[in-house]
Length: 356
Ligand SMILES: Nc1ncnc2c1ncn2[C@@H]1O[C@H](COP(=O)(O)OP(=O)(O)OP(=O)(O)O)[C@@H](O)[C@H]1O
Ligand SMILES: [Mg+2]
Image (tube, rainbow, N blue to C red):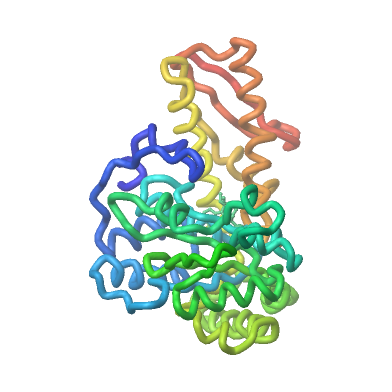
């Protein structure tokens, strides 16, 4: 299991504080797919599209003079778009943070684009405005085990037109010209662009008459084709054809059904257990979360409208914070077992400590 291979010293590495990443054996294509599928729940159709581009890069057969892969990730909020790129970074480079993220919402005005490429020499602020995207930054998010840098442009529909033009040059020739007239080469990158374009229509397609979870698997795959079409329609209305034509794969994320959301609850409880173990060391304790408690978190923290977005906050409020208060007050002995159940009145969770 890949998560198990990860060593704790890798966990906290960030782009700005890059820890030397120990070279590690990368999984095969099938292994990569399995790793992604197990950690991005219910979006297999989308994830499958990425793997061949990673494999092409690893084989040295990516086309020249263009990025190794360009993906557009569409779909409702909280369905795993950003998560996909984070998990890929973890599998390829050993840390979910080992990627370059550009929040296009920060570049809605024409003058803000200078933050991205740096101001031209001679302009006021030239020295204070180092470009956000540079060859060095790209190198810092690749690793010895994999020379492929992951670049994520979030919410591209918010980018100013001049940023879209810059992006077009990157997608087309894998080149970004900086303010000081030097060039950044993007051949060894996978570019992910996320957008909520079409998400509302996608929601409408699914919700008014029936929930997505109510569909049979055959109806679901028919619906998938329809969702792809709706998403692409919205993208074509917003971006020129030359932009759309340079995208290698459009991945439409489905609203998460109850089964997927329930699996995510289990994953997050497991992650909390690991976090307690890693952070508290000898003072760590075990968690036993009943089905009723899991159901409570599922009902409170997730919805087909908001996907899994609320889940982390609900877990923090209902479980992590009450646990932390008990730890801080010395109420949990090391190595004890904390049983988490739903309160009898259904308004919250109860935490009971039992010695093991
Ligand atoms: N398919 C999924 N599998 C596992 N966890 C998920 C999934 N979707 C969402 N999550 C959980 O919810 C959090 C938010 O998801 P994510 O950031 O991927 O949303 P998004 O699709 O990028 O939404 P937005 O459009 O709002 O940016 C993730 O950090 C993860 O914990
Ligand atoms: Mg996102």
